[in-house]
Image (cartoon, rainbow, N blue to C red):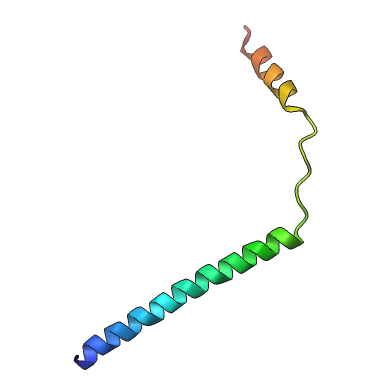
Length: 60
């Protein structure tokens, strides 16, 4: 193997390490965010009321 080939192989390895690190970091950040941030409030309108409103809107 020539020096150019070894350099290309080393660059590919570094790119793979960077990709794996990015995925792991994103996973940890998203997991921490889901754990620490409050969950959004539940919808106060029942689903069947929404369906009735949609049917009522279709009438001329």
